[in-house]
Image (cartoon, rainbow, N blue to C red; front, side, top):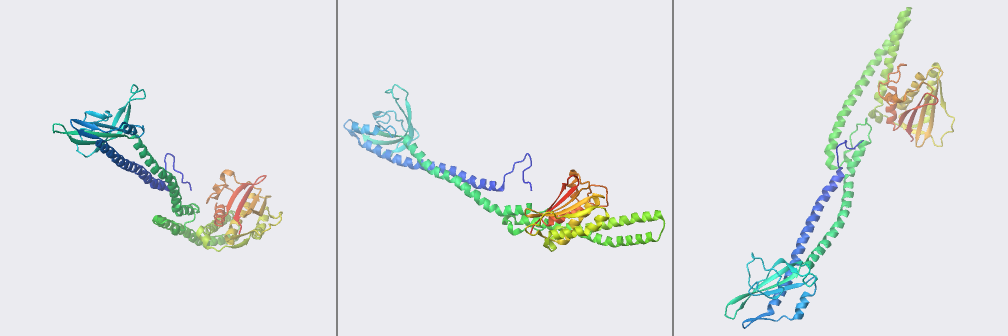
Length: 484
């Protein structure tokens, strides 16, 4: 069975489709899980960072105290250097009052967005950028640093008794926070990525095990003979294809009924024709005996020959009907000693070969095999196959010809060969002569069914038949049958 797609089409096996449909959601979940993990990491890291910034903002606010007509800033230089030492996790700060009027810290911290309404004593957070000087003491290129900023508005009393606001801002470099995001994302996705190949392997093995009954069903169909119309075993099919198997079995049953009806018609017609043909031959013989007219006798002989050919055709049709798969399966098989069986058939045909002036014999020059050459066979059907081969050899070899029959072991098989030195069959016609009602020559009185019967009977016994060249000329018919 050739299950290759036609040219120009592309198909995908059911197993690959199942694997793809199972793995595709896994990939989608992997991407969605990575995105969700990243969002959660951002959320929780921001919460932790914002809590730290909130504490730093309030701590810095406590270092700024209103006194008299101004503000007292108690922020030692050593504390400032500690905040600004680590370049990867640097803290920036700024105090301004009124908000926007720089007093202390880094005046490059961006102000809160205008859309944010100031809330007293309640810090809120936003992202921004700080432009810092390059390595050349501020004379080089300026670097843009992404920061997370906490802003806290605090009221304080002015000297004239007016209430004023003070803005305290603390910013932190986001590079360290982004590193944490990436680490969390990598620690989450890498194990999942390693699981995908393992999951693919498990799914591939699982789908193979799940589709095994379907593959067994396919092999059962592929391994069948075209003549085997027995129903498929539904127990070997998966539950999902039981309806398909039932439909196929119904189709096979319908075909089997039609074939059986045709075979019964052939068999019944052959039986019905036997009696009138036998009567015709008898009446022809009586007519030839009752006349002395040479012309009439010649015509009666032609009638007798036609009746003989008709009877032979009917016998061949009956044998062909008996050789069909169901009839062969119903017939009994028994152990058969092939050398003795073939020798008996050859002995029966020696007188006929002598009348045709053909030398028929059996080659037993080789020593007997160590083990008996036995097969399981229906003796009646196998006898019909071998007699057809020997009969054809006698018919077509011609006077003075030689026919040699040989039985020999060949591996685990028994090889029966019938070799003649007649005209043979052209190689181009050797496959065609196994078809019904096909003859390779116009000579002789055959009906073109002999080799078709041989092929069907040998096939029912699990063997093969081949036509080969004989040396120096002639035909070699090789019948190979499995040993018991």
